[in-house]
Picture 1 (spheres, helix red, strand yellow):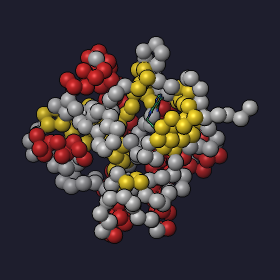
Picture 2 (cartoon, protein in one colour):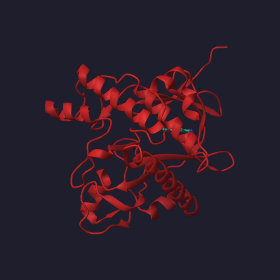
Picture 3 (cartoon, helix red, strand yellow):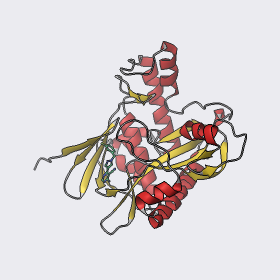
Picture 4 (cartoon, protein in one colour):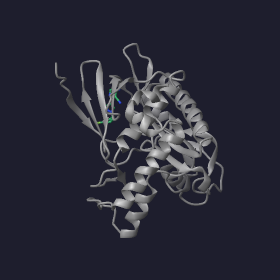
Length: 287
Ligand code: PZK
């Protein structure tokens, strides 16, 4: 019988479909965004790289926390997942001070209620990773919130569990990635509850779209770091003097090819698996 899948949601570069009462299908496209704008040019296989990386991390972290992954489809870009009740919280962990964390620190000396030492610079490594939750904005940017506000949203006990699990996941993945030459500066999780009220990791895990990946060999605090995956795209867009409002520019072939190579490099470094082997059989990432 042909399958029916009802479209239930869109992210910037992914689509979500309902398979049945218990299962969703998450499909990662090859679209790319930069400066918060989706560009008209796609990066071939980007969706497969991100889907494969997520599945790799789900398989590697299932002892830390269960996750929503049920099956990878043969196309390499589609994930069947358990339908959960999602928590109304973006679970962000930061190991380095950059982005909105750096902005908040400069304004207040703190990030989400974590008061930090004076004199820190953009991209400095934090003495310990910090949990910096944010609200889920329907439009525009998520708003960083302190632990009191986050605990009000999900309850104190659940908040404590979410913070502990998020920090454990980040510690595990960032240590593993650093050994392979990639710094995971920060990362964002989405967590949900299953029918028994158990905490389950959903969405994507430690992809370059949900995390900041930096090349370790170029790390130099004091200024913004190059992005492992999107730097060619950013440099090209900056060279045009584009004002960063939609529509974004088309990318030339050499930027597409160079960027695709960076995604594949991230996949191969982190998983230790050849990307062609993933294309032949996506289940190779599940171990
Ligand atoms: C869910 N999103 C965000 C991501 C989109 C939307 N396992 C789950 N159960 C219930 N809901 C979700 C998930 C997951 N993952 C995730 N919204 C709902 C999202 C990607 C594309 F359109």
